[in-house]
Image (cartoon, rainbow, N blue to C red; front, side, top):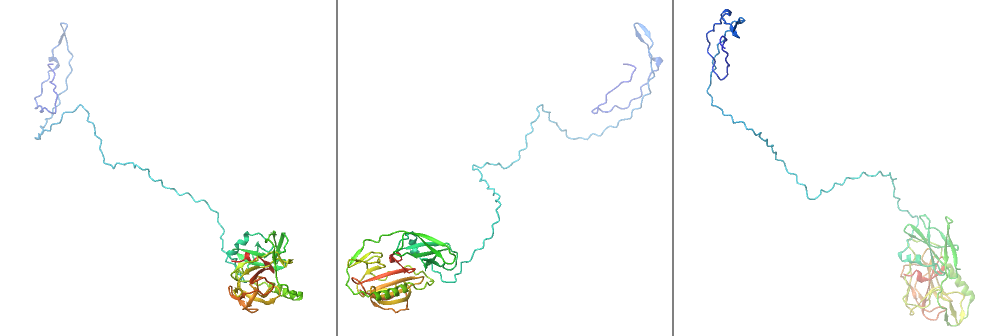
Length: 381
């Protein structure tokens, strides 16, 4: 439009316009009127402000730099690749790991009282231990002419005083227990029998059963004039030797060795007839047939308590082995020991003979427990 100043856009890429001379502004009276509908209308004109002087623009210094070519922008948004960090690969083991046992909590235990070991008992007197070879007596029945095995409940450190028919019996130690070995007479009645502890008055009972000792034997012997007074005196001597005082032993007086080699001719307990006359008592020993002069030895260690030449038993030796255990050796030909002498087991005491009332050479061997003749086979090794 004519009459107005020329307006221009200034770009940063276009060089600045040099300063121009000021444009003269016409006065209002000089502006012609605008013809509207062929009518001349006056035009209201306003005074224009005085032009503001334009400050000269300094031309910037252009430094030649290599043009950088920017790549054309891509319409596809680039995909950011994830950063891969090398890490060790965990390989699952083919076998399952061994489970670790977790220890269980120990159960609370009650506090046990401190047990003080008791020292072994000290025996004031010698104590004889039960030999293993006698353990078989525990399995045998108590019969007349036999032995009764009685376990004792005594806590004594010394052998208890056990009485049977007022006679003290053999008492041996088996581990932690005392055992009584009781000789039973041939004429004992069947049924209940009793022993008593003399110190505690405690009683122990056992049952005696009957036993058959075989068919009676008939023997023929030379007729001799019988001197009843002599027989009574000699019988009393033998009974006194059997009743030797009970003495403690440090070793068991049982079992015995066989005193002579030979054949068992007459067994213990047999009923015998001499010249068709019945004897009042049974055979109280074991007959061992042997030639005259064969050595006879002590069945166990002991002391000679009687030597004699008697009507029935001929030349005879009796040995006390302690604890009222006595052995008798009869019908000897010779005697090689003296009364009161101590002998060892297996020591020679005489020779086989046929003295006394006999039918031929042999040894009559008897064993006594608590003044009672018992079967020697029960205590022979």
